[in-house]
Length: 387
Ligand SMILES: Cc1cc2nc3c(=O)[nH]c(=O)nc-3n(C[C@H](O)[C@H](O)[C@H](O)COP(=O)(O)OP(=O)(O)OC[C@H]3O[C@@H](n4cnc5c(N)ncnc54)[C@H](O)[C@@H]3O)c2cc1C
Image (cartoon, rainbow, N blue to C red; front, side):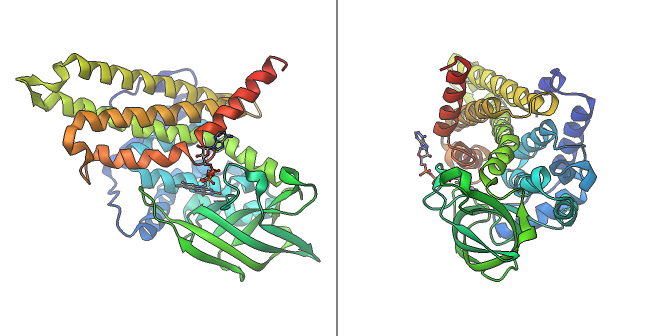
């Protein structure tokens, strides 16, 4: 990563600077492999990230983690650095945090003890199961049900777009318990992959492959003690989890964008066109200037949101939405510019710009599409104006 000046910004402290530099050194010598045999690649990545200690940033210190509470700046720095090297490594890291986030934030001590140390060690793989075919952006339309029966809940329904589906050891599943209609009638549960009644019914292939499946629940019984938080609190738990991790989606986008800029600078400095390097053309300079400026603007929003969450604000719904919206959209533009500067080679399979072009796309959709982030920001803005 050529420009590390952002590490000196006041949002970060010495422990963050050391974390970034140690992780970058680890990444530089790690063999991230290719896009073959994705499920095993991800299992290996989780194991290796755990062994090296990086997954400690995904859980609180009391349960095998690095900081007293989830430190969003550390998670963001890890995601940015991993994404710079490998989208799949960022994915494996992020899902350990997102998949166990509800337990970290709202679990009982028994649940935390059972799952979080293994998540941090990379010996258990976590997943977050919120979305359904008819309930993606509109979470409140969720149909999967969890019926209370004695000291158990019985889950029925289907979840889709579930990252780590098929390789996860446990899923944090959100289902309708019906206390009230809509968003107020949801609860969260831990469902072990081996639980009878839980089945992987489809694998989904995407342009940047990672384990992604549809899950089906058919009279899937879990103990009442597997419920996370209070009954009817599911929506709040999901949103609080996203409040931590949404900012870090922006950080991953930033990692992809920084890589695109570094590769574009390298390529345009050596590619000769019309008797001079491509970098000598003013339109190339304009592209590089826009890329560099948007990267700094993204970093400011990402680390402002992370710092606010870590240091003084319980909820950062507005800041996280701005960070995710801006950083993912800007990274898409930055990577597109890099593809353009590479010319034909930028769209050839295996070229770094081609890979980044595929890897960035889903970030503008998952954990709330860009339009959803705009709705959140607009509502918060009206609120601030008393409207
Ligand atoms: C690669 C990948 C990984 C994922 N991993 C997970 C996971 O691990 N767990 C999980 O639970 N889910 C996961 N998802 C699901 C993801 O969160 C949903 O795809 C997302 O919320 C959008 O839902 P949808 O696909 O149903 O699109 P829809 O809800 O149908 O939305 C379609 C489009 O409508 C537009 N739109 C939405 N709302 C508005 C609005 N208010 N105003 C204007 N336009 C709007 C947006 O452009 C949006 O992209 C993943 C998705 C992808 C692609």
